Image (tube, rainbow, N blue to C red; front, side, top):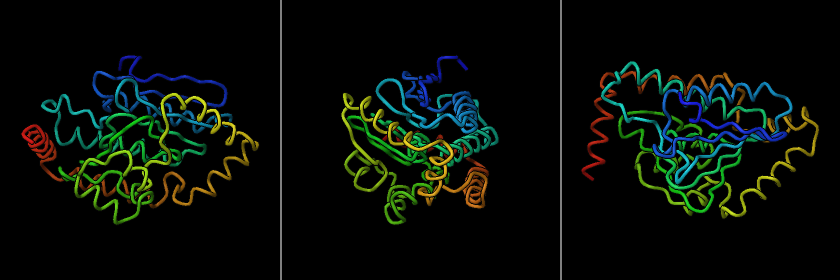
Length: 252
């Protein structure tokens, strides 16, 4: 992985992780997922951390799973990569501190799942979202999305695969706020003040208590989510299903 694929900026009690593949729409390559997972796991062990910020360089937050080299993939290699994405999402979802995702532009597939895994989910300016994985037989992030928006909305978004604009994302509960780019720094500072008012152990306990849906990492719910993902991705023909989906998107 190029050292620039993930930028890590530590400022006091804040760790800012920026996806830095703007020419690829910040799509999640295998190496970027590995770097994110390592950074999130290290952050979870840091008792001085109060806020983890995830953002994307350039026009888009994250356009999803990087399929730019699909011809060199196999069903097995794709299964391994999707499994690592699910484990990353679980780590973000169960983080013992506040997590903030800042979305702009296209936020798609695994990128939308990464956004949904955070406790605070802000649209900066404008953004659109989509969950296309079901179109090629993948079950990824659906339970976490359902926790946010409810079963009816989640089913419509995942099964329909439609583009979700900023207004719908905010109204449905996928996004918690919508702010202008000029407001971002000030609003982040206010969020940090809020999550830093109490001592560290108390704040982590409060964070766990108020996040009813944010179960401890590795519990039965995580195992079920992982099993659903593996079952869906392990069905023979995953690469061909993805290729067919991409071809249909190009024709459409």
